[in-house]
Image (tube, one colour):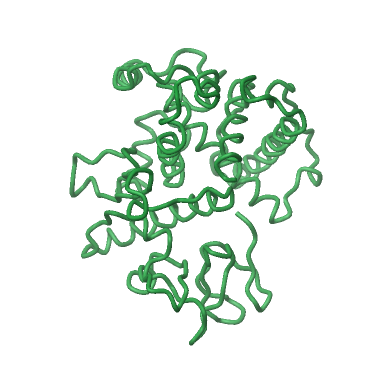
Length: 350
């Protein structure tokens, strides 16, 4: 996340809805990816979900017929808003979704809605398992379903403990499911011998293995011994599609986290820590995609900066009596998968 500022010069943050210095209402303009003042007769107005429910601070052009911002317009289903609790949890969900969309905008990946493209467009169903116990989070044919109850911290932490996860966040859910959507949109229709499909298979495994059987085996037996050497999470070891989704989610986490640190002045060159070194092969692309030395080196330097900065974040968190902010280790096998995720992001964002 980049650093924002008001026209008066005061610092603003991505969630800011008012400048604490000049007192003006502000909102995020997804068109310019900047924070703008909201003035009577001005060029921008708050999204209708912000005006009516206080759950959105993005803006739409005043002269536009659209009432919803690009993020809220992607919703196909929202919770029952007669419940104050639902409105509160929905606000948390929307905040996480907007952070995902911001990162994708920064990459350059466009997100057509289902109304614009029924086949490859994107939509979100935000449904409460309390109201519909059959709800499961996931992606199907361009529709990402998320369980509203995950916005309840206690509910989410119970699930995290039961599933043995080191981290479980709303933003992580959206990032993970976006990977399944992008698989469908960019990779699923390619011929089986397309270089992108071959590269995917080299790094993540054979996606043709039975998905239901693989997940059932994972939940019955857990991840294989030594999974930490090749997977970013235990769940990633369940199936190549889940390995891809966990890796993509982690790539977005690193990208956003590194941008945030560096935009706020936390840079590796200012730290009294040795730079974490990975072997050169960790930055190489699969051979069928070519292997540009400069780009491989740039990726490796980028990843190593994050590994160093994440150590600082962990130490700060622990000094405050909290758990590590970044409870992950990146071995060479995971770095090589992140390299492919980075390559896909660059191609899809062109």
